[in-house]
Image 1 (tube, rainbow, N blue to C red):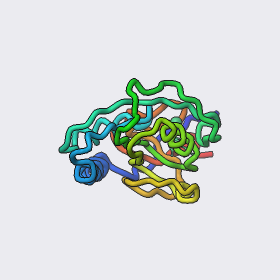
Image 2: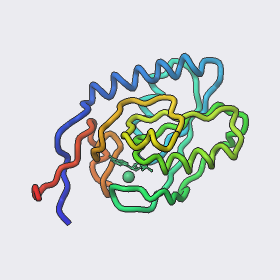
Image 3: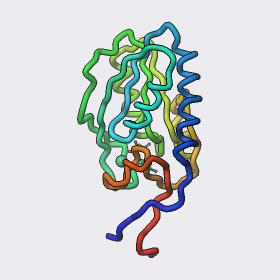
Length: 179
Ligand code: IMP
Ligand code: MG
């Protein structure tokens, strides 16, 4: 397998921070007085969740869930397993699920069904990135940071085979061999 390295930067750290602050502003208005429970999906949404809640001007609680989606490094299969569940009961809570990227939307569709069965008062999605296919699954995604074409990206939490999550920007994935 060839080593894959980050290529062209498509979202700089400043662009990401600016948009996250805007989204946090919208969330703060929409959830004022509702004591939302923010659920970050590990590991990809870890930085987005951390930045979002710190930019919000209303109090919230947050928790994390981890899921593993079977498939290749770059395509999810839609068969999802919860590897870390919530610490908190969500019944009657206003829940906002924070995701890194919606590609096919299969991971999120599974998660939303699972969380809806726990009877939250409301359940919405805040995704940093959405790719074109995401629209086809008819997922209600209340907040989307950036719409991307069908490219594979890394950085700001996003990985390929667990690499490049630590980058402060989002870059297209290149290929070291150029092959
Ligand atoms: P979906 O189930 O096809 O929507 O895929 C969602 C999951 O696949 C995300 O939570 C990521 O873990 C991963 N994923 C999809 N696209 C990308 C990408 O461009 N870079 C890194 N991970 C991605
Ligand atoms: Mg991944």
